[in-house]
Image (tube, rainbow, N blue to C red; front, top):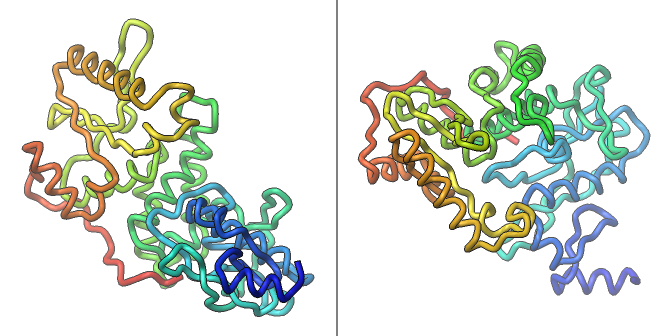
Length: 333
């Protein structure tokens, strides 16, 4: 395409400019999840780098490591290196507009820091390693986003694809590496929240929705549930998202993708998946004598929304507050 035709395609919103000289078809862009969009921006920024010991970092590294950005859309890309020289060209970076097409908003953010010991390569792209990436963001993002990222990181090392047994020791090693990063040292910006999140993180939470549900249960003062609780049956066992021994109930978070995503359905229709889930729940109830409660993404839109959902099941907070969580004062990335 000529420069003139590219300008026309961008102005008519047929192309999205993700970085200087880098474009994505608008229909493809709209279909992507926010993490995929930010990954595209990160790749374009990396390709535009001059020579220099600079790594993609912060939210760019989050998405390239395959971690979620729960209900958070980064405004800019991030790179980290020992100095600003040779980082990236100071070209514009897109931010969200109302119609799903991104409008240009500013150059990548540059963070000056030594990064040699935290260098990692993903698909040919130099990024901060998993521990450094988590440490860099969990004190600077909304608390729910931070918990979802930390949980997913621990799960990535403790329950790799294909494994069914949670490797707690691997998770604890990563947790310790996160705690040793400079971003969590006393006095660092966001370190209070970051240290709390690192200690609270649990890789047994299988999705961002489960992570946020777990956080809200804590904030409402409930005792910590058993995660991925197992109930034996004739051919093996069922795995249930939350087990509450003190309440005598099971809890399940249901994301819509579970019943709509072709990969997750694995050849079943939505109707078949719903029927199989009903039979599974009936068997769990019959074997344990406990009822199963369910909630969806809309029910964890806020802490108060979740409290009302639990109340509709006749489940109320026990009265006392949970362990104090740090007050988040707004996004800092």
